[in-house]
Amino acid sequence: MNTDLNTLLITLYVHLDDRILPAIGFTRDHHPGRKPALNDVELLCLLVAQHLLGISSDRKWIRYARTHLKSMFPALPGQSGWGKRVRQSTGLLSAVITELARDTPSWNEVTRLIDSTPLPCGKSRETVKRSDLAGDAGYGYCASHSRFFWGFRLYLVCTPDGMPVVWGLANPKIGEREAAAAMLDHDRHLIQPGQVIIGDKGFAGREFETFITEDLGAHLIRPDRKDEKPRFGKLGGIRQWVESVFDTLKGQLTLEDHGGRTIAGVYSRVAARLLALAAGIWHNWLIGAPVKRSLIAYDH
Image (tube, rainbow, N blue to C red):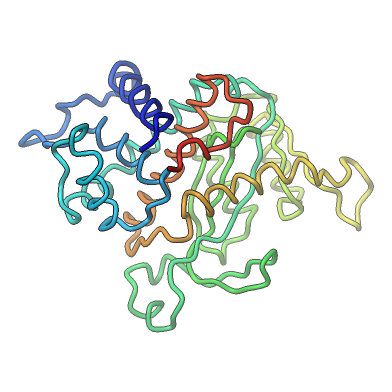
């Protein structure tokens, strides 16, 4: 690993151990039964390193870590033990993402971006029929790539610099407004009164706008449709911000190569990639990097 990634991991380790985990009620000894050889702070740092380096395969990652990181993390588990720990840590991952978001200056910005992107989970008919995700995942259509997919849609609310704030997965057959409303209602404590939420035309609808305005106390801004009076314009430049966030997740952080085969597996693997994105942005704010969402310094 390079010095930039080493610096990020050391800084993150200290911050997690001293501030974040105690603040959310997690300690090194919170696990029932025998104390795990790999503690939660080490697990989180290893996950961040794995996905910033773009290694999607757990088998390949364990080989890499045992070759290059054994001195820093001597208690590395095997592939099955690693996968089990990651699947059990979805709640911890989500809580840490939120705390990292709260710890960045962009948390206080009024603007939030909302959008969704396909999360494929299988490519063959046999996979669809035999997968443990059958009944939860479904078929959907990606208009931007003119293709059908089977899996979920990832819904994301983030700050303008790309820091994840609220996220969730939904069956693609559920409408965008319904899925987004359910997600925002569940995590309404993360939406501050008066915030401006910018979405695309898919979030057009009186009921959804009323929910944002009256229930959340926020404001919804979206591109104007052809069949309505002009209000906000096209918003093309701002809409590109969230598209670039998804591009980072799919490119460097290998979102579409998540490899999850169960609900717990998919959620934890998506959460791990969002944690890596959050950690990179958090550290970029800390060191004063000019582009906060850029992870290039940590990918080698």
